[in-house]
Structure formats: structure tokens, C-alpha cells
Length: 157
Image (cartoon, rainbow, N blue to C red; front, top):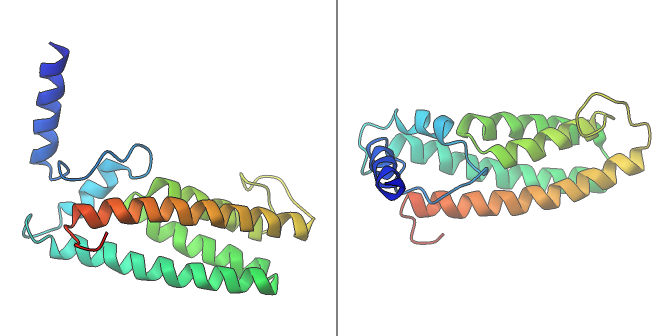
């Protein structure tokens, strides 16, 4: 009986366009991403959502380069701004892990702890945390990028 329920849930997911999206766990918020997919005129081509997602890929890659440069310059203010910028874009698409790491970078760059509630006065500690978080961010980004390229039938995932 439980397997029958799973099959019905699977059929429900195919109706909302997410059946081709691999299991994303906590990487992608399905409800948020579904809202983007609902704006597509053609569920086969998905031109609208594809353009948003691939635009995000370009934006993220450029932002990672700027973050690396800002790390080298020890520019915490710029790192905070870049984290905030990419946090918003990733949240719009429902890229949960990416958004969470960006938020941490935003906080560390602003001289705060991970949660953004307590002050951190040691710039070296903040820079070290940003470097560590950026490494995690890039891994999480690569994972979600690969899943979304498969979803959009990109021949080069």
C-alpha cells in the first residue's frame, strides 16, 4: 500500500513539471523552483526558466571570481556585498544550500558570526571562515548546477 502511495506522489510530481528533476534533498526547494517553472509557456522547451537558471550560472561564476579576488585583498565589505547579492539570486530559484552559504559569507564579511547576531572583531577569523564557506559554496553550487543541467537536458552537465 505504501508503494502505491509513492507512485501516486510520483505521478503528482510529473504533473507539476518536476518529475525530471533528480532528487534534490535540501539542495533545491521544490516549491520555489516550481513557481519559476510555472512561468514557462512551453513545458518541453522551458525557455523562460532556462534563461533564468542559466543566467544565474553565469552570475554565480562571475561572483565566485570576485569573491576570490576580494579574499586576496582582504576586502570584507565587498565579500559581504557579494554574499548578499548571490544570496538573493539563489533564493529566488530555491537553491537552499547555495543561499545559506551566501548568507554566511554576507555575515562574516560584515564582521558577524555565522548567524549574523554576534559581532566578530577578528578579521583574520572572518576571512578564514569566508574562505572555508566559499569552498563549501562552490561544491554545493556544482551539485545543483549539474542537477539543473540534467533537468534542462543540457548535453554538457
